Image (cartoon, rainbow, N blue to C red; front, top):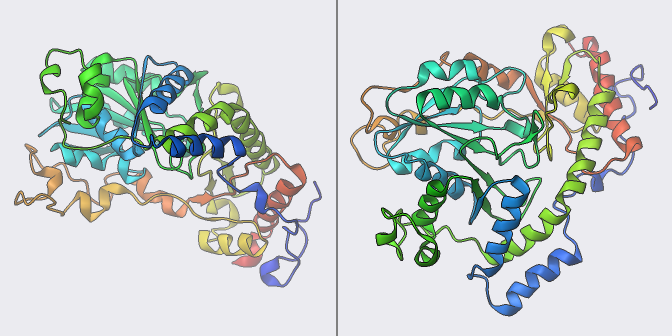
Length: 426
């Protein structure tokens, strides 16, 4: 890998570091004739709204995860909502979730009359901090939502131990972490239930879909009864649910379109090999930047037994103090001038958004977040300092889908070049 760090910065008139055609490095999802034929077979059969293909996918996905049950959904948000219902989250209850996540990890609780109590995150993994969970548990707490953020597995062992101590459920949001390992174990098969998105941009894509996995028959049946009314006549066995078979308890229709189920089966079949190539490519990128000032990889230590799975939405830690205080936006501008692709990446902290603080969504006469709470659980500025600080310390980095060292090396050179000449940009 040629070292171009002493060349003039492109932002200051020098040559760009990235000169090779690299568009195919990022093209996703991979659609082959096998995908097309599987989808066309559903269309030709006119079975888009049936569930024969769906149940095959559910069984295959559950086997991949190592769980007893799989239940497919129209999207990941519906899967998370149903996981909450499956865990008996209801009016006046609380869930604990990280503030740094996509809104669907937490906001569905509002549909059940529950509220969200946010916990802070670990600065390295960017996942919920086990040390900030236990003091937030109250008699109203029903579940802890763990998000394996941007593919990085959360510290599941202490989280599960806390949950077991207090008799609450653990819901894993695995939307970012298909195939990620936590200490050698597959994420999504460690807590009580897992829910995840399979939308087209995810590392395991199915068009627009979601799925829930669990070993718990009650959670499975409650999720089924909540939004899968057509299948309840045949599948419900629990005495408190069977009388309601035929209509969805939640008033939702969560059925997946079978074109997505068909695509998902093909994608799952090839996912391990595709994931392995993504891991090889992304680790090559970060290995090339090892020791470069101002940048740290967002990935577990190599000796930990934990991995990043399909590495969805990869991030890097930005350390301006190692670059003489160079503002993140100036660094981004310079790397992009080199053709290196970067951006501000961290999600906005949810606990500060008006929807979680002032919105009266259902006309209860008070903000929905505390509509059925015994006390005001809202959290203002300064309450979750790690989550709030990340806007200035998180970079989006290229998501390489193929291991092509020469092309990836040019992106490494772009980042290295800017970091090594940061002082010239002040």
